[in-house]
Figure 1 (cartoon, rainbow, N blue to C red):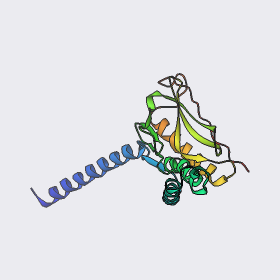
Figure 2: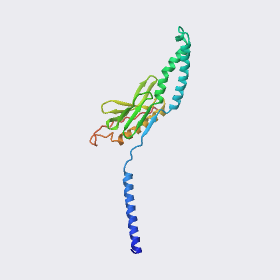
Figure 3: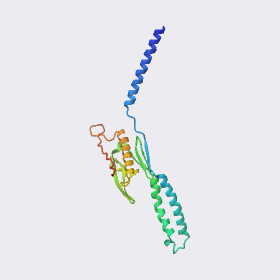
Figure 4: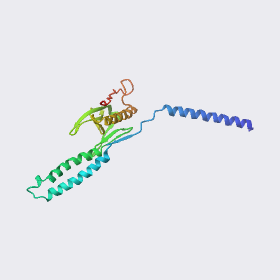
Length: 209
């Protein structure tokens, strides 16, 4: 093979490689990548665990004073009341500190810190993602809720939004958008005539001004 022929062959091979690389780039760039999995935990879980440790110490001291006191007057002692009060607060702190929510390509999993099992809502069974106001003993909170086809609602244990704390409502809005993004990437939120025939049910949280 002469030198000019070799140059032509090398040039053609280079052109073919460039064309193939361009085709691969176009296909890769046009394909939508699935959103990355995201995990939500309580933003102040370290502080909650610290408070839980303090509560354990105070409750232990209270119970020691309650048990060592005279049986006729133990119930009237301040340490006894402190022991009962701290023992009631401890589960609430641990439940909130250990709350976790995982959103991925399969669905949404959520669990409170003291819950025995996680609640799971697979995307094929989710018909809507909304934000609802729920009431607790310490006030009202907003939660992201995944609504299943059977009508059951799966509220996310975390994050939560407080109307009196705009930063928490902004974080809740961002979390709601991420959940909706995963749901739509899995085929949810389609209107009738667009494949699955599901109806879109997306309610955005409102941030108080």
